[in-house]
Length: 325
Image (cartoon, rainbow, N blue to C red; front, side, top):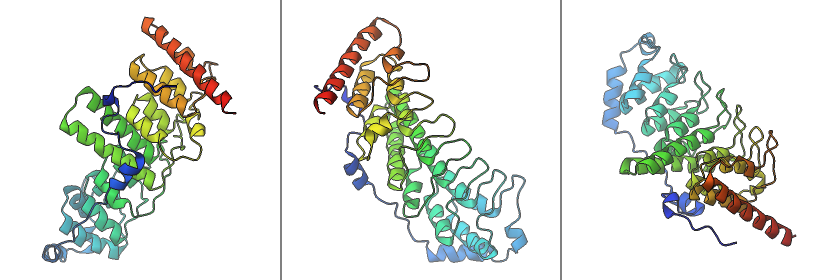
């Protein structure tokens, strides 16, 4: 079957292969603290007693939380050294965020690096159960993830049910939609950063088959639901041991092919469906309402034409599968 002729703009910034993209990703080079700056910071804070250092403001923030949020690296390091001595390096503010989580949320990769090297708990979570990986993925903080990449991480789901990879894919979907709606250097840069976060999390060992607790969706479900063709193609091109197994996983009964069929009847939707079929999606699978993907096509004249095309594509795929047996 000849590949569907598609608009190259759908692929946008994601036309590179997985290996090429990952090979080009570099670690964030953290510059050394200037000794004079560190000594000056130590001199400014050495007179503070443990009580003064650990004192909290009306929001429950300590001086270390505030320095980390403001990006004051020298002062953060000098105070963090003292917190380390007192066993308080992971002390939490009113939302349950440790200084490391505050530094991550503030997009301060250098302070993140310093706190980790001083012994901050990389798996510390806030009241929502979000770890540093969740926060970095949610906000598309690629430099922060580059700093964290050499360290081992857990990929548990917080109470929200989302893994860090789910968070990063949601951010990437939003960035892709913004870029498709309004092309601008800022939106393009945002899309690159969120895509890098997805790639880095996969390098760290995140699993594409993990399902969120509430909806049972995998990251492929999320990408398909958003119509994010570049990300879908990237995920399908990964060297997964059981790609058809991922493609046919169900989220409350719906496979990714069900979700693609329900998208607006556009040429990009037809291309997306073809990608899924070529990757092993089963068009005969039924959801909890006993519906096959073809039953979910939105109504309309063009939709009916598109449905016929989809049926021909599905029939061709089945014939190819049968002939290969």
